[in-house]
Structure formats: structure tokens, C-alpha cells
Image 1 (cartoon, rainbow, N blue to C red):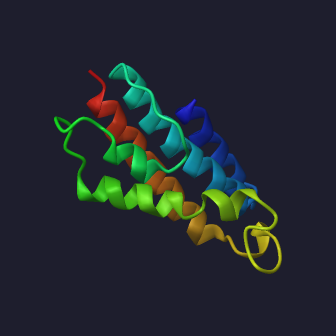
Image 2: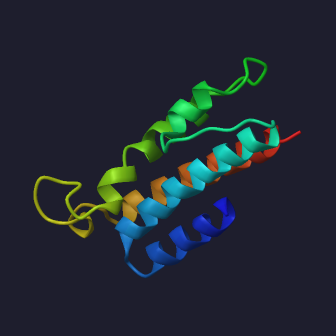
Image 3: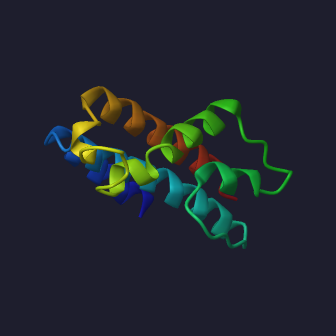
Length: 119
């Protein structure tokens, strides 16, 4: 499902729906990290990727760039999804092509790292 969300983020970005690209990039990261947890026979709830990474076993060393990717993706979970995520306007007023490129790159980084950690 993480891969499908990544695909949706790319399609949304290409169509100019940058708020959708942001949301699906975040979903890719979230689902990738949760898949890693599941592969380790664990379970986790919530949507904060950074927090899920903190809950991984101590034997898994999370690189700083993955923590950074998680933090950047976490920042857009609410604001890209909900029409009242910002004090004024709607999400489409705040996300742009640059945001899409960066967030998709973070999502890919998280997905690839998670894949590399699956036993």
C-alpha cells in the first residue's frame, strides 16, 4: 500500500494537485514504517511516522536522514488533508510543485529504507 500511495502522490503532483501529492507522500511514509513494524511482528497505532520510528526495537538504528524525512512528512499530515488545516484558505493554497518534489523524495527515501530493514 505504501507503494500505491507513492504512485498516487506522483500522479497528483503531475496533475497539479500538490496538496494531494503531499498527503499521499505522507501516507507512503506512514504505511512503509508500519509495514516494517508488522514484519517484526509488532503493532502500532497513530499517524506520526517519527513516533513509530522511535518505537522500533533498539537493534534497528534509524539514520538521521530517515528521521528528517519522517519529520518533514509528519508536518503535512493534517494540513494537506483537512480543509481547516490552515487558519485561512484551503490546502491547495499552500502546497506547490516544489513541495511535491521534496515530499515525494522523502517518501521514497523512507520506503527504500524500510524495505532494506525487512528481515
